[in-house]
Length: 299
Image 1 (spheres, rainbow, N blue to C red):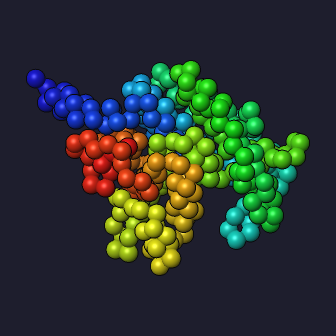
Image 2 (cartoon, helix red, strand yellow):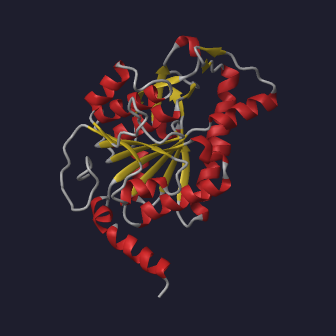
Image 3 (cartoon, rainbow, N blue to C red):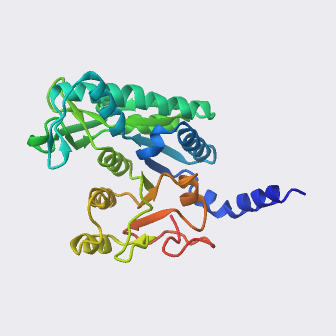
């Protein structure tokens, strides 16, 4: 008997408590970073999402697309201005942002999921007024902060067996307003509005690290705030952890910051004892199936 087959069967058997735990769960996945530009990584991500749907979960994908936006702006000769390291989104720029996010990037992910045997539907925050924004910072132009969420369209899609893929482009309070929304911010707002069981923030680092550089696998929000205050959490990890804290306040059961470059990162996190990043949660778990990793003893 081939040992690889035996190992595969054992892995499937060991996944049973996790499959049971996440049956019917709503899991919002923020997809971005280097994996978006790699065809093999995109196909692998798509298979993971299809598998999640196949075993009874309700995955919802929200994506970014910063590098693709930069590329098209450069090709069009549109110069970008930056304030405090953040791009100013002008009326001209936001048109390009919408073209890239709602068009090129969104449909590429949709196609990859469909190629893997799923049924994906691509939408943006504009569809059915799902995400309504106000200006987040006047100096940054048309960068939006979600103030109203109407997520019934997402429930309708996953309830009909579809996998929603959402571009972080939103409408405003005024007619014909378009806002660019940070991908993590959009994913957090969607997860909060859905009262999701999990929000997975795929990034290009292995998780939240302590002062010694070790990944902290389980965190309480108070620990996160303390690590921000004393500088252990710094730079680009600050907005990610702040998104996590806001999502928890809005009713998400747990948020995981994990390395999207790791093969099958979502499956590692959801269906193995090891997990694959830093899990942040406020509430105590509801159930305690056997064999779960320390700090994550239930949904």
